Structures are given as structure tokens and as C-alpha cells.
Image (cartoon, rainbow, N blue to C red; front, top):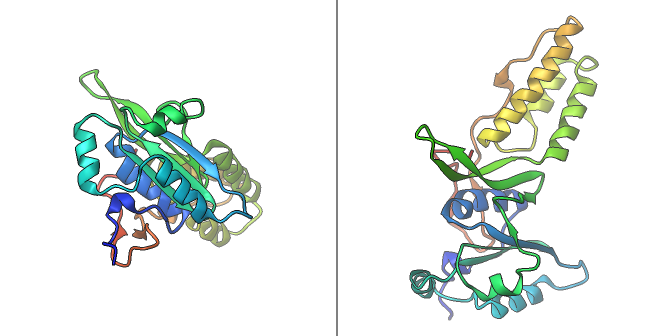
Length: 233
């Protein structure tokens, strides 16, 4: 019997929402920023793509081998797949993946990773000392946000307060700090329209501020990624 795969050898993810949470909380925060995404054709068995990528880039290694390579200066690389969508993401350092994909590889500091309506990136945050540090950022992707904003402004004065509160509460995005700021801005615009028309305004308590625990890997029966103490900015 083969030993249970280490976390680094797991690649099948439950959902795109789980992929977003895992990349934000476990990868972007640990130096992973070089990435390539792909969509496997529907007629193709994704397991064949898994085998091809894992073998091509030597990703079937133990956590001890990974630690040894990291100490030697090599990049760490993760392969993750949800249904037909896959992501390869790496840290700094030499690696066959970095060499083979250099024509199409993207840097999360310059080009956000778009997944399930979210925009994941690494942004420089200035500290009080004047020094900048790179931190992960998770927000609603711009075009998705503008569609969401247009939807609520269209119904701001034509739907009941109860209907609007229900719709706002059920917005399908987790409350990462930038997402919360975006939703607050949306609500301010909605309330401005309602106030102008003589209707009551809606309070910020309509939104959910606690992140739901989420199971990440398909072959995990006991590991749940809970909301981090500090949500990525």
C-alpha cells in the first residue's frame, strides 16, 4: 500500500472557492507568485493531464525532498486542479517549470490571478517606517464587481428592503478585507439612491463578516481550512 500523500502531493481541490482560500492563505503568503493556469478540454480525461504535468516537472516528491531542494535554492512548485481547471504556481528560484513556461508565466505582483470572480494578487503595503512589504490581496475582480454593483443599483428603489437585504446577505463572496471594502462601497451607492428617493437606508450588518470553514482537498477527510486570524488584505 502506498503511503498517504503529503500535503504537497495533493492536487485535487474540492471547488474553486476552496482553491481561492488555499492559494490566498497558504501559498501567496509563503512566496508563491509565479503562475500558469489552464483549462483541460471537456473531452479529455483530466487525470492524464495530472500525470503529464506531475511527471514532467518532477512534482511527485516527499516533503523531505521538497525541503532539501528548498534549502539548495530551488523553487517550490504546486500543481492544483478543480474539475478541468488547473493552476501551477511557484516561488522564486530555478526549476524546470520556470524554464519551460517562461514565455507564458505570470507574476502575481503584476498580473492578478482571476478565479471564480476573485482577483488574487500580491500588493506592496507601505509601513509607517516608509518601507514597503508585499502582502496577498483577495478582492472581487473588477468586471464582476461592476456587474454586481449595476445589479443592485438597478433594484435599489424598485425592490423591498427585505428583498435587498436578503440579496446583499447572499452575495457569494467571502469577507476578505478588500471584498468587505468593495461591498461597503456598493452599499453606500445603493443607500445614496434609496435616500434620494425617500426610502430607508440599509445598515452594514446585512453582510456576513465571518469566513466559513472550507475543506480543500478531495482526498482529505479530516482537514478543514478555517478562516485565518488575519484575513489577507
